[in-house]
Length: 189
Image 1 (cartoon, one colour):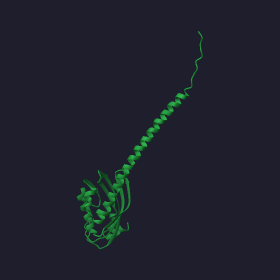
Image 2 (spheres, helix red, strand yellow):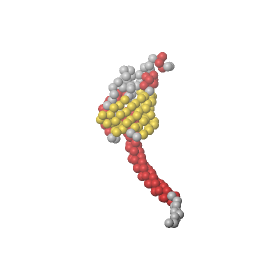
Image 3 (cartoon, one colour):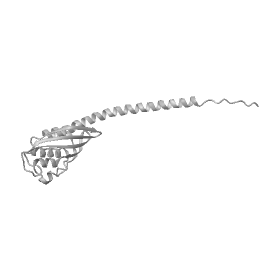
Image 4 (cartoon, helix red, strand yellow):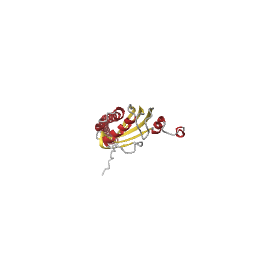
């Protein structure tokens, strides 16, 4: 019996073919992922733009211009607002209207401007400035007739096209100092 020599074939062509197939599969997956990501980013971007516009309107129009009815359009019925300066937590559109009326009652010429607006996901952050003349009672402080300017930051969480929750921090101490309601010892601290 003659023993023949078996010819070994190189595995390289099979490996190359498998690698090319895997690469094509990965490339297709990446292309699909990019398409979905871009499409969703565009949709999300539109939503974030709408949310940012709504948060700006809340600051500038509801609080800044006294367009209280706009709160019905922008605020969810069960929305919760967090403002450490307020004794009660405002809820829903009526709570927002009450808070806005309170601030505008103390500062009838209140003007608020959104200085910077940043939207990410379901949240919108606004850095704002408020200016007005103290002509009504605020936090038990009788009207002083003094002009005041304060800054603050509000972060709104949006759900279903409306503000669902809001957190506000503003320079309350700075306002009290401008109104002369803080003892002199605290003003220099």
